[in-house]
Image (cartoon, rainbow, N blue to C red):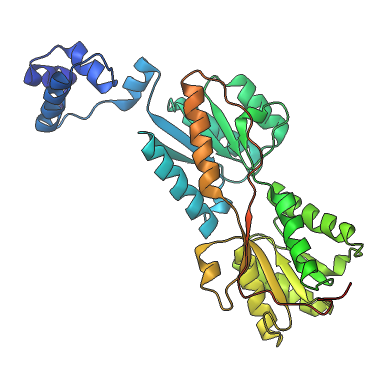
Length: 341
C-alpha cells in the first residue's frame, strides 16, 4: 500500500498542510511539531514526491553542477567534485551533477535538465559553450548561475576564474631566474580556454625575456597522462633542444617524464619539469613535482557563497581572478644560464 502525506498527518496528529510546511522547511512550524512529523515519516516509511514539492514551492534545496565528461577521468575532476559536494553540504543543500557530454548543444541540454528539476541555482564548468552563449543563458534564466573558469564580459559577477595566464607567466619567469632559456611547453586540448591562457602566459614570458618563440618546442596535449607521454615522445623525435619543460597540467607532466626517462634524460639534472594543478600525486612523484597549486577549493567555496547571496536576493560583486601558488619541489634545478647576467 502506498503511504501518503495524509497518512503521515494522521500518525502525527496534525493537518496535511502542516506536514507540507514541515517538508518545505517552513520556519513557522514549532520544533515539537516538526519532531512529531519527522517521527511519523520514519514510522510510516513515507517518501515525499520531491518533484511535486519542488513544483509547488519553486525550491528544491538542490544545487546543479554541469561538467563535461571529458574532465571525469582524472584527479582534477575529483578535487572539483569533492569541493563542490563538501561546500554544498555545508550550506545544507544537495549537489546534482549533469553531464555536458560532447558539444555545446549537449551542455545546454544539461543546464535545461537541471532547471527542469527545479534546482535552486546552477554551477557551470563549461567546455564547449562560448562566452556569448553563456551570457545569453544567464540573461534568459531566472535562477542564479555561476560559471567557473570562464571570464564573462557581460556578467562578470556571475563567474569565478583562475589567473591561468599570469600564473604561467610567473612560473616561466621562475624557470628563467633559475638559468633556463630553452624551455619547451606542452599545451592543453585544442580550444580549451585554460590551455589557451597557459600557452599565452608561456609566450608572454618568453617575450619579456627576449627569448625567441620556437614552435618546435611546443606540442599540444589533451590533459591526460597518455597525451603527456606522446608529447614528450614527439619533442624527442623532433630533436628539440630544451633544458626545462612546462606541462599544462600535472598528469601530462608525469606522462612526459616517462618519455624523458625512456630517452635517457634525468629529471632535474638534464631537464627541469614544471606543471600545474598540484594534484595529490605531484608530491609523491619521483622527483616530487614543482607545480602551480590551483585553488580549486577556494574557487568553489566562493562560487557557493555567491550563489547563496543571489538566492537571498543580494547583489554579488565580481571577484578578482584567483592566483595560484608555485610549489617548489625537486623537479626543477639550476639551468646553464644560472648566475649569468
